[in-house]
Image 1 (cartoon, rainbow, N blue to C red):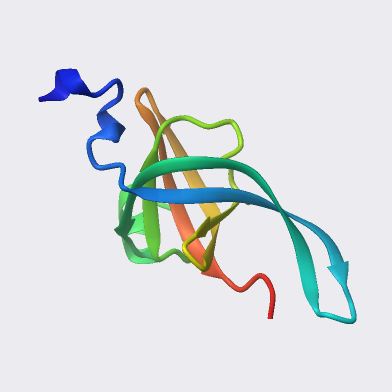
Image 2: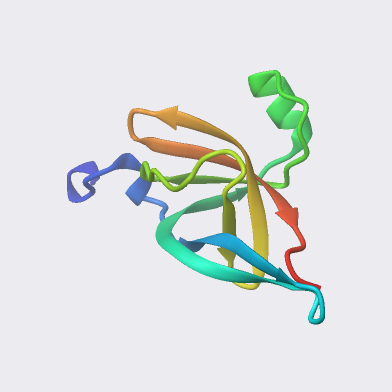
Length: 110
């Protein structure tokens, strides 16, 4: 079965994330302009800050983790949109097969 996939992370890659960049802030509208930088497909899973602390020794808030192919646009602080929800990358573990990205849900506009 694995021979069908170029990357082990492709097996469960069913969630598309849009990597966006915050631009100028509009005081009147109380919003940021958002620019799409790239798109990546991966496996989005529930996660927690407690697991992040236990597995990596990091005390950071997070609710999800995202497994995907390596992408130079995904680094700590990157903003990902999944559906209508936004997440900030609070930690990125680089593996030979790709990234494991720990995500904290954030409010961008509103």
